[in-house]
Amino acid sequence: MVDRLFVMIILMAPWATEKHVSDLRKHIINSGMSASVLENAGRKLIAVSLCGGPLFEKSFETWPGVEQTFPIIQPFMLASREFNPENTLIQLKMKKSPGVKPAIFGGNDVQIIAGPCAVEDEKSCMEIAEKVKEAGCNIFRGGVFKARTSPYAFQGLGKKGLKILEKIKKQFGMFIVTEVLDSSEIPPTIEVADVLQIGTRNMTNFRLLESLGKFDKPILLKRGMSSTIREFLMAAEYILKNGNPNVILCERGIRTFETHTRFTMDINAFPAIKQISHLPIIADPSHATGSWRLVESVSLAAVAAGADGLLIEVHTDPKNALSDGVQSILPERLPALIKKVRAIKNILIEE
Image (cartoon, rainbow, N blue to C red; front, side, top):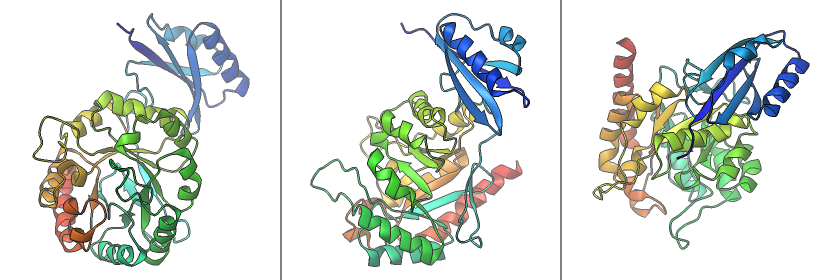
């Protein structure tokens, strides 16, 4: 049996010096514990952890520069409500187009991310983007680096696809969400995308998560298809621990015994994660259901359960889509869906 991981946060005073921080960190490490120096809202923090044994947190309050200490039981300490009792708000802003309204994840609005599973060609993508924009959606998704089950399936356009996404961003003033599969794809993608997506197959690619932690770009982290909620939040912890606080979780359905749908949307995950974590969480009803006919109903259920947004696959010609056409809705169905989910969100806010 593995000993439970106990962790503690030491909050340094606003006037604490670098020497105060380094001396205390050295003492913690010499005592057989690990210590990571972090910064939150301009304040220095020291996260302490060890396996087994008690943490005498009050003794650290006698050190110069320490304001307060508090224990955290959850192993995902930085993602926990204990670390940050307030909801984390992640804001997308268009630096070169100040007239574009910011998109905020974790607030009182439901953010809709819509577009095709894959960027197939410029003509179709521009058409979809125009329709999605007209429907009232300001965040476009489209994969250029594709992780496919079959090596013979369409693998994406790569850097050529990034140029198409860049054109959509400039022409329509839309935020861009796209996936990266390994660290080498981060530099070119980060120049175009406003959010970097990590797919279900890469949730446990910890070296990639650590690399993403070194950037300040928001990360959309999808739950692994067979991962528990705890494993999901521990994956987010890799990004947070390496310095990037901008993590948006995505419940995209888990693998169960049921085969009627592509996956099973874990509605429990939304209120459960909201209780123990401050990170925003959105739903991917397209991958969860695998059928466009079910997307709207599951979207409504997810928002009612607490989802901060939706990731929806939209295509103007789904029957000829190179990827996931069967779960893509037509653009004309998007306005009614957005109206309904925002009505549900407003009811929740009023309560």
